[in-house]
Length: 395
Image (cartoon, rainbow, N blue to C red; front, side, top):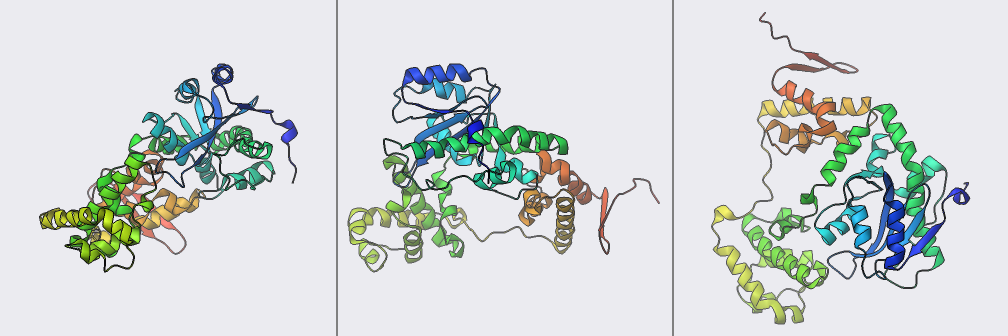
């Protein structure tokens, strides 16, 4: 496939505060810039930022935050509300900046989200999108590289630069396509959800919900798991180490099922290392005892589900048919609009239901609410849905 690197701006490596200030001065008047990061987190709890790449149609730079003592000029630029940050699959990159400044560098435009709205498929990778839109095949040789190692090779820097050079090339075309289809505001709606700091806040009290296998536990066991998962999360955060280095999910589940009353009981588990039991056994037993001392009404229950009446089940079926119809009509995956859980949330009046705001509300949510309120009739025909307003006039 053709490679138009010769038409791309030369990239520079920025390693000093003076170089960074010069770069930021050049970028200060930009209305948008492409942004990406390289990081590692295999040995830490929080991601360690190793490289920041920025590009406009005129320039490209790889910025080394490990070498620059005072990077504030860059962060001030990235958090400038007047500059749109164009990113692909932005969530992990935004998480890094959130931990640096407890806020997100808004506004953001996510090309992965935009590509989904343009019919390129949900969660399309950057390389695949570049290939589809620009006909360029990107090198993937450094996908698993250790970006904390110095010096960085020329090949590594080319690889990193490509992540923003072609992002800057694709962006205008993507925006034009969105405008032609009237879907630019859809991307803005998704960006607003992603820029909510609550997305990146970590609550140790709810971390048990992410433990693999927790759904098979009973409420009594879940109370133990909640205590253990909170303790593990807080230790991992304090020591900045991966949570699995303290205790794996399988071991958490085992302890919750055992409900040990003494460190000696822990020794009967084949999955727990003697060193862990010696160091933390007594504390684990105390966490178990604390959980069992809680009132049963305070125990969590992962098996709780929305229970709909027979009529509501029928309504949910019809509502899902409408979502699938609107998805097909607009070239989308129906799950991008709403799932069965989203429909159930709408039926029971959950204020956090995604179908009640943004483009989902406009595309299907308003109709679904009208259907629930009796203002809309939806019927399955042989080949399509019949959707019609219900007259308010008495028969």
